[in-house]
Amino acid sequence: MSLRARINSPEPNSGQNEGDLLVGVYRAKLLQEIDLAEMSSLAAADRRARLERVLGHIISREGPVLSTVERSQLIRRVVDEALGLGILEPLLEDASVSEIMVNGPDQVFVERGGRLELLPMRFSSSEQLMQTIERIVSTVNRRVDEANPMVDARLPSGERVNVIIPPLSLTGPILTIRRFPRAYTLAEMIGLGSLDEHMMVLLSGLVRAKFNVIVSGATGTGKTTLLNALSGLIPDGERIVTIEDSAELRLQQTHVITLESRPPNVEGKGMITIRDLVKNSLRMRPDRIIVGEVRGGETLDMLQAMSTGHDGSLATVHANNAEDALMRLQTLASMSEVEIPFVAIKDQINSALDVIVQLTRHADGSRRITEIAIVDSHGREDYRIVSVCRFNAQPMASDGRIYGNFEYYPLPRRIAEKLYMRSEPIPAAFGVAQSDDQLVMRKSA
Image (cartoon, rainbow, N blue to C red):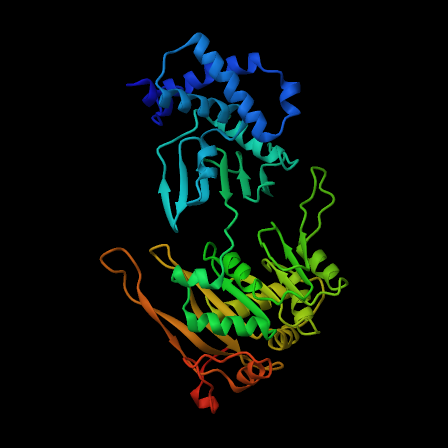
């Protein structure tokens, strides 16, 4: 096996492979020759450049004789081990990777284009993986050990990190890194097949006309991506407060206040929840409130804000369809410490919500808006949903892709009238219902 192959070999053997040993040897030599105090005073880019330069001198002085490609690969691996996240460093620089999943030292999966892929790489041991995990969590002043075996955090560069280690994990340390999603516009999402131009015009009008919108979908369906695109349609003159567990939204408007929840410290104190932030945001004179995801008692506060003067607010919720989204919101709102009967919560939901946008991730990895639904019920009535757009998926084609078409249905008159009064266009593909008989209506208890 060539030296180049040994440097990058992913194959495990009875211990560390030759590439791991070679990297370990030169990492030790590098650490012997650098001044750690001096290195800590340098910026990240300068620190890497200095390490690469010193290691280059070591290789030139002590060997082995390498080709240009082999030399650069060895330097890259050693510096990544000494400074970065080892074998994960190239993955973090790969824009096509949306998620990195490390299942113990022997399995590294990534998600590209909505599909999972097992990579031919591994950590040399559980200890090396733990060192990488500790380096990651230390950047956000967190620690992971048997007393704190779970960590959920956001890196300074924006990636969301989840760690769970033994004894809770029986397969070794587990590390999941979710990349900071790129901010797409609705027009760009048309190119991805997530929606079409008629839907873009409708959604744009709904946001600008200050309808309250819930983005619903399962994990990995692109809720945050769509929420970011929708929030980009809010007029620049409004005061926007965003509230998230991990700040991912990137709004370009002038007047944006970004709030992020805080987990408890190592002593179990200092936690600030999404609910705390929603309550506080109401005292900040917001024109719009955007909640990255409602998942608990803050749902009730969000609903009350939507129905008491904060029109045009946006939020996401985990649900598989529009009906499930309403029932989940009802359940989450009941988790508040405020004792409130379900019928009163139903009243809040019917008063607060206008639109549910449902996202689905298909078997081929594609993500689409599969329904735009209007909440047409009032007061304490059973939930009544009017579908104005649906995606009809076809069976998977021979090329492994899911194809289909969007179907449009008439808008309820009250929705069309509000759009008209706000000078927002009504796409001809939808039209306006002349009576309830023309509406695609569903009821849910």
